Length: 43
Image (cartoon, rainbow, N blue to C red):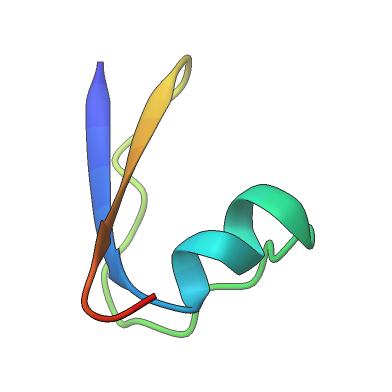
């Protein structure tokens, strides 16, 4: 299982609001399957 750490409110947006656009410069290294979302920062 892979994990993704993001600041709030983005963790909420990924889970509840359907955020599916990522603007970072890194590439997906063929990650498939379950991904854990770790919320960092204030809610």
